[in-house]
Image 1 (tube, rainbow, N blue to C red):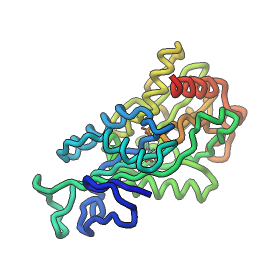
Image 2 (image 1 turned 30 degrees about the vertical axis):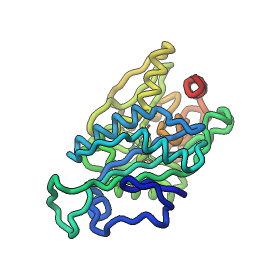
Image 3 (image 1 turned 180 degrees about the vertical axis):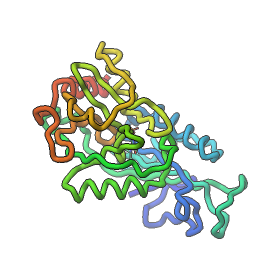
Length: 278
Ligand code: PDD
């Protein structure tokens, strides 16, 4: 396993960072997860645009050719189907201090791990998800892809212990997203998804679903969604880079509609597969 750390490509067990790194002490850092299929970044530019947004939002100033670094990392790891993780922290002052100044050198770290090409196997292979619905415990800047993921982790664990795969989050009576995915609901042929705000991450896969819907004449609306609307949904989906678009078949132990993968999901899955190969 070769990782990238501050300008060097080296074996993971030789990569070292300071114990005073602010990413470690304060989660003062942002990240991206980018799938590479056959050695090529999927929606790479969209991920890099979001990274620039996150960095700007937490006021880390860095200039790197991210695409060149990540492409090189992928090729040094043999190419193929890999999930690339990129994290940039504010760096270290050499001691623990809440305050920071602009002279700190950001820590740049990237690594990758094998993934399955979710679109190579066809829709039959996709396992539907079971989810729970629970309170959104996060802060109010969920649009920043921060590594401060403690609420996400605690809630995911709660879901796992309830025999579910994910949790849908509710804040102020409205659904926001999952712990590491966006949320979609289908009713009478229309796709509904929570609108972009500081309460959700602007998912690159979410954006692609809306683009493909628009291109193919499938109506969609970005709206406020209440948790009680889940019960009347024909289909519910979640989306993320590493999972693509996945049908949710059970919510809090109750089947979604008839509990089978829906026709619009099948169609969206096919559109994704075609998009990936064009
Ligand atoms: N998570 N919402 C949250 C809170 C997320 O963490 C993610 C992604 C998404 C989907 O974004 P995208 O479609 O760009 O992957 C939505 C990544 C995969 C992770 O944390 O591993």
